[in-house]
Image (cartoon, rainbow, N blue to C red; front, side, top):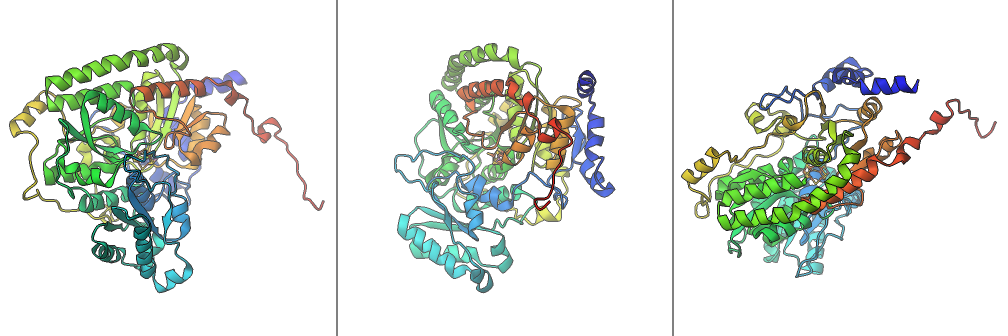
Length: 546
Ligand code: CFM
């Protein structure tokens, strides 16, 4: 019996798994979900199409979050010296309060508002009579208490429904104060199909109200911005350590451990290095058009990926001094990584992983599992777009639906005085000829093996089914999935908050990750897990009054 079950598990085929996932759905739901479950063919630039960034089917328990979460929590949350004021009922603030593990240091000025929860605490009467006065009062109160450089206002669902004009309130308060930049985000939770819409809304306002506010040129020779790095579990600290060692100056990180001033002068950098393509590519594109800063895709998750990204940055600047320094740093850091791998990989080799995270990490963390010689058998995003799966070459073919049209696209022009190409056309051409790729991202599918399953917007039911059928050695997702998966006897690692671990970025982070995964996939405890009905299938019960 046990052997038969084992045999069946080993022999799963992706097509069978796909049909098993769809089996219980009503026909219409099954048809829709079938388009979001792809058996990967691993073809570069020509993968089969996957439907993404569409509404979750009502009734399905999605893993996604809301637009407000993407704007307030993800993009603006990690900035330490901007007061993030949520206009809405208290629950929206409370659940966005210190839950993402984006770390910060207080900096030399000690200005850090991250540990505070600012909210207008809307009540029924504000919903009925309007909340603008209350919002103005709250902005005034935050200003009087802290005198921050900047206050950002975030709209929650009811604000959009009753039509409070948060932008005019913010503008009036900004004019009144004179020394505090106040602006607002119309990021009502329902605005888009997921948190991805919130990223776009945040990008637009960051670009409009923050980037380019300070023209003062900061010291440093090789100046970059790191886009789409949010310092979860201290990842950003490790990347900063490596940059410093290499002599690379990071003007601004968008937005891990960042400050208002860093955003304000980010247009003075000479290169934008993009980590999380999904959440911040809009800013990268807009900064290129307005200021002439080229962007490249990088990844600091995985030791090899880190080395590759550093080399890519050095190659862009093209100066021997930097190239040599980067090589020296890699040579210094890699022995530690290799020693850890030599010890750990014999125990992890051949094991299997599944990853279902946001819109970037499934791809990034695949690098770390590759280094452990583990196989990623299924992966996907909660809210990735088609380009995050298949690469940016599909961008011209993506059909804009009503939900995407709902999100503003800013028309950007080159800045009359501040647009400055960072390289001559000739230099750019020469780099491209040597294989250097600007503005390019190939997506997850090209890196996944043939026959693996790529699934968009995986839900609670399918997650459990998938684990039952394919029995991975580890499943990676978020807190909502954690306990249901663990109850199936499979170790679960949170790749959003890292449970309480991290950093996993850079060289030292990679070593941390290897050790934790080793511990998880080789722990026998998961095999002992049995639910009561597995131990004793005939549980009997009676009513208390019987
Ligand atoms: Fe980018 Fe992120 Fe992600 Fe994301 Fe997120 Fe996150 Fe994520 Mo959670 S910005 S898309 S909205 S890498 S919070 S730091 S882990 S879902 S994969």
